[in-house]
Image (cartoon, rainbow, N blue to C red; front, side):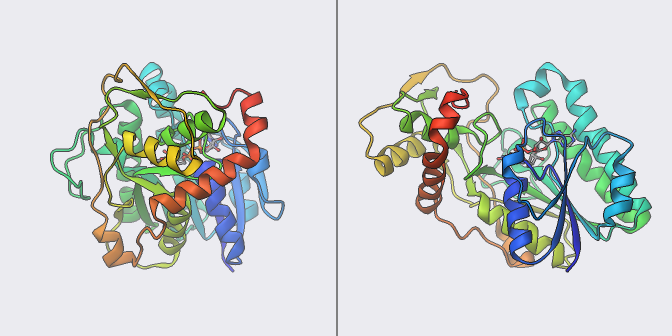
Length: 318
Ligand SMILES: NC(=O)c1ccc[n+]([C@@H]2O[C@H](COP(=O)([O-])OP(=O)(O)OC[C@H]3O[C@@H](n4cnc5c(N)ncnc54)[C@H](O)[C@@H]3O)[C@@H](O)[C@H]2O)c1
C-alpha cells in the first residue's frame, strides 16, 4: 500500500485520518511539532517525526519516507491568535505550507490533500448554503492564510504537476477534539455538561453552523487520495444548518442533564449564519456525511466520558 505522510497527524482531525489510513492498510508517517497535537493520539504502528513544517529538516524526512501522498493538516488553527499575531499565523500556515510544497516537488509527491476551511474563507455568507463558487472574503488572518495556500497548491499543480485536492471543512467535531479549536463548541459544551458545570452560550444562541463528524471528514480524505477529479476544491460538511441553542438542547437531552446554559455577550466579528453546499463532493467524489448529528454527538460524549476526569484535572475544559 502507498506511503502517506500526514502533517498535523497528532491533532484532532489528523489522528482520526491516520487511524482510518492504518485500518485500510496504508503506510502512514506523521509530521507534527506537538504544539497542539498529543502523543497519546498516535498509533504505535505509525512512524512519528516530531518536527515543525517550517523547518528545513523536512526534506530529510521526505527522503526517508518517500511519500506518494501528503495529507496536509498542520496549521496554526486559532482564529483569535491569528488576529493577535498574524505574522506567526502566516509563518506557520503559509510559509510552512510552501516549505512542504517544495519538499513535495523535490520528492515527486503525486498528490496533496489539503485541509482548508469553509467556515473561515467565505466570511459572512452572501447567500446560503455557501457553495465553492461563493466569493472569498475571510474576516480573519487565519481565513486569509488558509485560503492563500489554495493558490500555491494550484501553482504547484500547474507548474510542477503535483495534483491536489483542497477540502473546505465546515465545523468538525468528534472524539479527540480540543475545546479551543475552530469547531470547539460541542467539545466545550459536552465537557461542561459532563462536569456538571453551566455552559455559556455567547449571544442569543441562534447563530448557526454546519457540524460535520470527524469520521466522515477522515473518509473524505481517504476518498480524495484515490479519486481522480478535475475539480480541485470541495466543501466538506453535513450541509445542515444547526444553531448553538439546538446543540446545547441535544447534548442536554442525550445526557439527561438538569443543567441549563446561560447566555453571555455575543462575540464580535463572529459570522451569524453559515452552512455549506456539499453537492459537489457528492457528485464528484461520491462522498457525503453519513453520521447524523445525534449519532455523532453520542459518539463524542462516549469518548469524552472516557477521559473526563483527566481532562477536567488538566483544565482542558474551559
Ligand atoms: N476543526 C475544525 O473544525 C476545522 C475546520 C476547518 C479546517 N480545519 C483545518 O484542519 C486542520 C486540522 O485541525 P484540527 O482541528 O485537527 O486542529 P489541531 O490543532 O488538533 O491539529 C493541528 C495539528 O498541527 C500541528 N501543528 C501546528 N503547527 C505545526 C507546525 N508548525 N509544524 C508541525 N505541526 C504543527 C499541531 O500540533 C496539531 O497536532 C487544520 O489545518 C485546520 O485549519 C479544521
